[in-house]
Image (tube, rainbow, N blue to C red; front, side, top):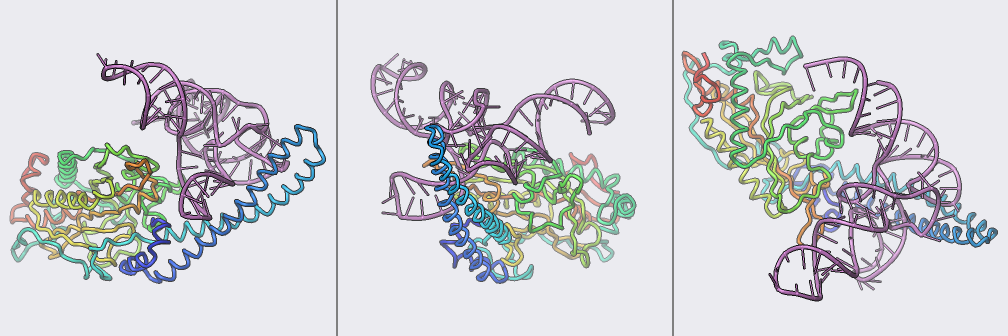
Length: 424
RNA sequence: GGAGAGGUGGGUGAGUGGCUGAAACCAGCAGUUUGCUAAACUGCCGUACUCGUAAGGGUACCGGGGGUUCGAAUCCCCCCCUCUCCGCCA
């Protein structure tokens, strides 16, 4: 969440940033928020003053009681009681104001980095680069949802029976491909200096707030109501929350973690076109990379993550492009996001397989994730993460792009992981 | 799930109604001493909010939330968590 001092001192900048992010009524909301802040401080001052007087009277009462001056003490008691009553009223106001302020702050998205292009939707994203030739497929090339039936490697009907739509069962070579990809991605991450973690895939409310899924994405996550735990939509949540309420020793920075988890998304309201086959699921596997860096190093780290992810796509021999998301298409919490899209040839569509973002201090502020700078002051760190990678669309592209008359060729880099070279 | 014990500052741990924002020790930081290292000695050493140009004030916080009281780390109620034993179980 945004820092109150920034809102106070750089109001115009904040409003401009919010507008770039397509946030409605930015100026009015910020003004309302600052007004709340002003009132809160006013009430707090009044409250503290009353409380201070009551406290000092209480101390005197103690002394008087000891020295036996009962009557004087009784007189003070009456006054203190009155002060306390007034203070209590103010304290209630204060709590209300603080809650309102907190909620208002939670509602504000992160500010975009200066390099973020203006724009409203995916159309306005900036194509940073394209890599690889688009494959030329024969006339009778099939989309992956036909291929998986043909080779019996992913079964949606079965998933339907067991759970419901969007929960496929991977079978035979399809299941092995999943496992191979997960292992390949994790091994690559380790080689790149990430420490592997296996976090819980259910998280509590505090963790949801920590990384910004709550309150923004409430309703998009599955909730285990009995225990008030959310199924994670991404490993970003548990892995980043490892560092909630932590003051990291500077010498441990940057922190680089990677982990594989299933991810669960309700995708409420987003069913419709373009969701066939593996394109959009309620449950999918993903390897996530997370970095925590000093503020001055975070953009360098983002570039590093971007090229790392591109390296994976190159090794998988998939044509891809990199987008710099425009203000209107970026996630709530991000300051700068690169999306990586692979070309899935039979569908003739670019599919998002990764999203790498720098959150600057937005998450760190919620997480209270800090370090001590040279002068000993605690300061917020920067958090980043990226998918490396999300499996289903990678699978879709591999299947579609590499199909032949007698099977589907697997990328060479996966052969040792798969134990076969062709799906047939 | 049942029974018991417990949750205090970076750590250990004292503290059962007022002079305790919290002893002591350890760790940490600064300094003195010192061939070097070590030791010894001295000082500093929680967080958030808030007032103030600053120096420096104020308020809150001893797992969380309520309550009693002029005054709560300390008493009462509810909740959460940890540990031990029992039960169940991959």
